[in-house]
Length: 235
Picture 1: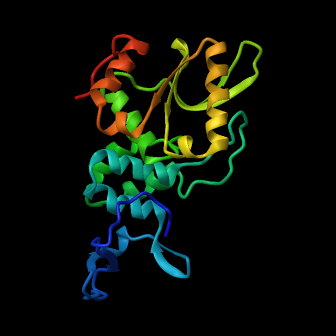
Picture 2: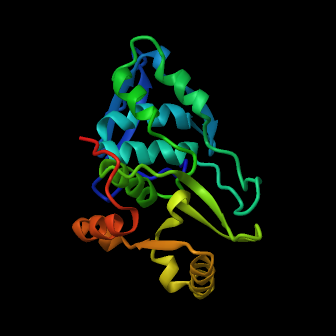
Picture 3: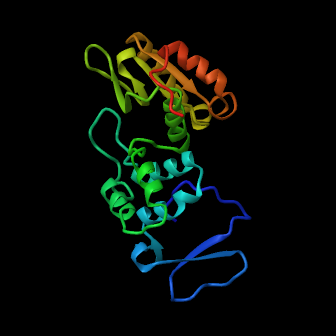
């Protein structure tokens, strides 16, 4: 209902939370959980009582793989920016301060884990693969120098916005979702954008889902060719 990235299939049970002591909903296909009143943050949206976006992240993140938990938090914080400007197309579902507040609730389960993951979140990731790519690069010793970065030529003209960039080396890293291939307007824009990048002395590492999730060795080889030796490797 919040439009957050969670893996849902026909077999995924619906999780219904209730305040401890109120009673539990027992139905087939329902996963019933109870939470202490001090840990719950309820808002009304879509004509239903829902856990707030910050609460949703705090409840779900501990049960997810780390990369997916961080991608979920990124989605909560994401504030889409109009490239080349300082304007945003919408506000985030929650702010970092709201996540900090809900994480700091005394005696919250997995409080230390959430606090650690919170430090790794960003408002600049527009998709789960972008979050995964950022984390993968950092684990290889290539923490991004900039996120959601406006690339400009020597005259200051806006050429395009890249989700991950290393301005000192003039390298942009772009995740190519399927819409880059099947959407004519996006395809044409990409050709113009990367031609302009090259003319301005920038190199672009274009990353597909196949490279990111299946052929990471090849992706690492290409990364090292553009960025050189890693700064450090995160265990």
